[in-house]
Image 1 (cartoon, rainbow, N blue to C red):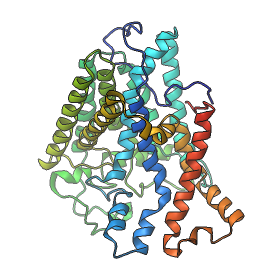
Image 2 (spheres, rainbow, N blue to C red):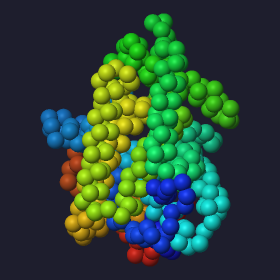
Image 3 (cartoon, rainbow, N blue to C red):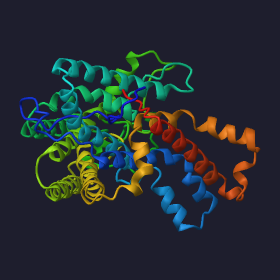
Image 4 (cartoon, one colour):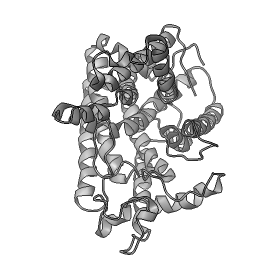
Length: 414
């Protein structure tokens, strides 16, 4: 726990091949980054609203159906709002990195000390993800698909790239995405006799792909094969066979690609150029990246699948992240409209705390309400609205905890 207020997410530098000069680069904290991060974390915390249950309670409502659809992940290909939470969080790790390196250099920290801290941060994030995935389990659940673990696995490499030129960073992005695509394309596609039900997939699952795209089918791809070996190296109550959602450890590689996109965006924000020029370049980058990701999928060269973080997904979702960052930067930091975003900023400045609280204390909060206000406290507006009332109460308490920490300048850092 810290009493200063640097960003909770890793940060770095658009840097040339040599270290940035903190006396030349402006030492400014962009509120837009905190606000964007706050929106991302709010969407994650808003799972407490149980919009899917509300849609079931009101089966004739198109509004509840729409909201419920965007609060759940797509089954395999495609994208809804909820699918953008993890790539946005990862993207912002890269965006923040340039500011962190410059800030640490201004404090006199050596590159060696910063490197050691980056390695430590990566390890802690990996283990924190494992811890959160182990809550309620009979033993440690050694799995690495949690957002924090995915970021932690790639963070030391991202930090190393933070000291390289933008051209080098761009080539690194290309190598990461091309290499990950080649890994899947080279792995044998499942044949007609592949036993999908034995791997957690219905034989007639409508999302199974054919032809070249079948290389990216659920629990029959290169990343699944890696986990079938790798995760069984760890103690587990029974051998690992497949992940029910199709998630995979190796997704940290293209997730690194998402963080590199953020690193490039953060480097642009650190440049001495007119603010509206930065907004324009972010928009152009966003449109191009999204179009390229969509184009790859449309050409049948690789589907847009968030669960295994395909290269087309990295570009497609990364483009939207550029556009969102451009919007927040324009409104909050260029135009200067900040007051409306204060609730989001409270969350965004303590995102690690928000992430952990959302995963650990929801049931405690709900039980406390029922203990002190009665078992039917959430039915005050009718049984149909119970999931929503419960969610609003939970979100309110979570935000008040974060606000209390904000007022006392208590920011959980890794």
